[in-house]
Amino acid sequence: MTIIYMLLAISISVAILFFIIFIISVKKGQYDDVYTPSVRMLFDDELIDESTTEISKEFKDN
Image 1: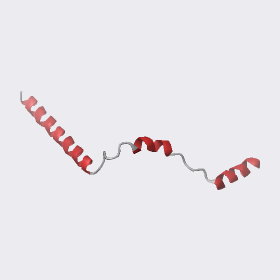
Image 2 (image 1 turned 120 degrees about the vertical axis):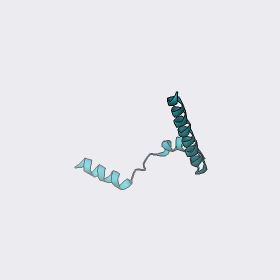
Image 3 (image 1 turned 90 degrees about the vertical axis):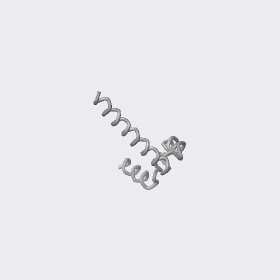
Image 4 (image 1 turned 180 degrees about the horizontal axis):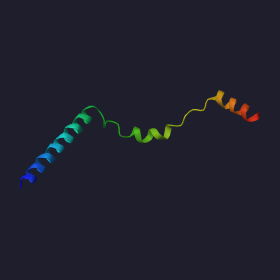
């Protein structure tokens, strides 16, 4: 019976710890913008530099 009380105390402690971490993350603005990260991956394409394409064309010709 003692182990049940000990496990209950540990589980309540862990729950309180996660609740405090959640409150801190909400106050720091972790969940303010939930839309932009899902769209950001669509605009991750890198711009192609014109100078590198000319060099690669010259390299292919030789």
